[in-house]
Amino acid sequence: MYKSVVRDGKFLILVADGVFDNQLMELPTEELADKVAYELQSAWEQGISWGVHQKRKELNGSGVVEDISEVIQKLRTMSPAIKKFIITGLIGAMKEFKGSRKLEDGGTF
Image: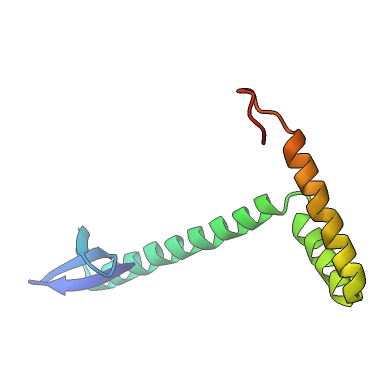
């Protein structure tokens, strides 16, 4: 977090992390210090927001999230017997796939 403070007649910008406050810079006026602290904090928050958006976009590049949501919705409407049949089949397929994968060192996946 960025904040402006007045200490000993100096207008300072501090970076605060909840434990420590570190001086970043000294500015000539209180108004300028307030404005700079506000702009730095805004830029930080925009960067976090952008990063979250990019990560979501990266994780959902091929529509995986929508596909998973659709499958979950279908599972919710299925009867318990059909759910059990599908899940049992998936578990069997996963075990078969896992046993068939060979690693470069000769081990299995």
